[in-house]
Image (cartoon, rainbow, N blue to C red):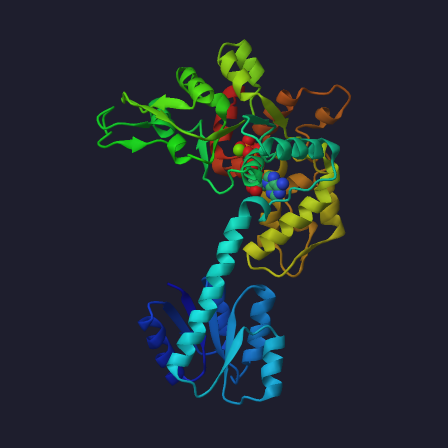
Length: 446
Ligand SMILES: Nc1ncnc2c1ncn2[C@@H]1O[C@H](COP(=O)(O)OP(=O)(O)OP(=O)(O)O)[C@@H](O)[C@H]1O
Ligand SMILES: [Mg+2]
């Protein structure tokens, strides 16, 4: 089922086309002029736009140009009663997908629509296949630290070794895990993420390994776990440092033998899945403290890739900013925005404690707030414009360096004090609420 926007000042055409399109099983919205069409496009997604050419005010060609400016991949079909070669050429040059000469039969319109939708489906399919590697993420770098991480990741992708991704929150561990899957021979298999933090222990065990009917209250039928869903693909154990000790042994056995039992089940299940894991905790410290099994640590840690913090790779800031900005503009259907020199300076000077996630959130806010084509300094949050931007307190910038933990603790404390809600603080820090909640607990911040 597709959704179609019909733009025509003639009521008859609107009614007939709408009824016909509904009959084909699609949804349709009909409007009478260009401005109404643009408003509709701002509200909802349409697969195809059929537009009249001769309309009072904004004509079809002007509308076409405006639509293409906002959404370069939109498909627009023009309908015109005054078919001249010159006009057809102009329409195609302005980016029309095709045109219909009035009066046209509805079947003719239907055929054209079917062809457009077929091409759309193919395009979407291609995009889906490529997405794992190249959609909104930038996996190029000018920083030696990041290049080393990317190189190791590409090499490791070729084999089935377990890779442990470490690095501060927001540095791109999830992004890199999915890229490794996309570069690997398992790219056609599923990429299954399991967040080891979020669930109560018995739920997490059942989420990972599945359960059989009657294993616990509420287990009213057999359910396969996420590991089984990753058969022939990759399973990504996110925040693996939070895995309860009781489950660590069971995971270790899976890593060694690819075998496990569902919760409450007797049958041994074998699954062929490659394991990637990530943590922003110091796992070695957890091992020393007895919170994490040493044998599991070694097993996960065959290859470790540490993602550098954003402030450790300032070389990448210009390209990342441009890349993220372009992605966000198209996501928010804004024409390409540029940065005023003052705004760019502030982005470069800031220390980005929340790393790439904080950068994305900051730019997204700016894209939404900015008026006109240029993002000004005012569109950035105050914390970026302060003279000690990015350091928690003035003394942090002074001679005695604080430990990273202390710096983080103070920064979180300060942001929490300023924010009205936990969600707001998390967004400002560029981390998710669960992570913030955990950090707050770890640092004993009320
Ligand atoms: N190379 C990149 N190009 C574009 N965006 C990126 C890149 N790396 C990270 N991001 C963006 O930054 C955000 C955080 O990335 P990600 O979730 O992978 O971080 P993380 O290290 O897993 O963080 P956490 O430890 O909090 O889970 C996401 O919105 C992601 O899209
Ligand atoms: Mg993550």
